[in-house]
Image (tube, rainbow, N blue to C red; front, side):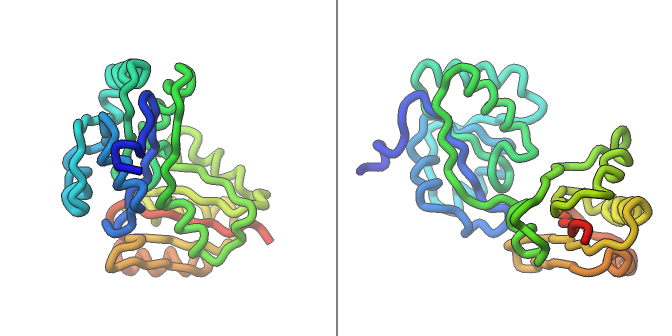
Length: 232
């Protein structure tokens, strides 16, 4: 099978990309990005770094992000209905998970377009599996609300029997953990940062201990994935 045979006309490919380490990409993902008619990327500047690292030559690279959803979603669906193959990639991980890509997937499904997931890294799953907490049942909350609905969501975890996974900004991390500790009391937590990179770290322990350590450091930069153990 040649590279040209790897993709079907009029299909949307959801291509998972590395969450940090650029080596974490599958051969199938590379072949798909090389062969589709259009690659829709959340940030083309960011994506060009990955493409260059693996010497992937794409036919056409377009931006698709939160600020052009209204115009680009319809355009991409029309390309798909015209028989063009499109690969969707996010800045990191699996597209459609807490990023604008879910809007394109929903529109493609409604239009009857074939959607093909190309598996790979996903930050919530990586953090969950490395946390040491029960993984047979879990709930993923994405990014927590900044204000409205935030406390109500945290309160809903009081009797949650499943492990909880969510994203948070490093700038808000300590405050968020303090809110959780205040609402839920003692609970085990795992804070995952820089996953798959040189300075990868997993801070595990009682939530109070983790808060104390992060406060001592003055917080952390960037986005992190938090895993909250279920009630016992």
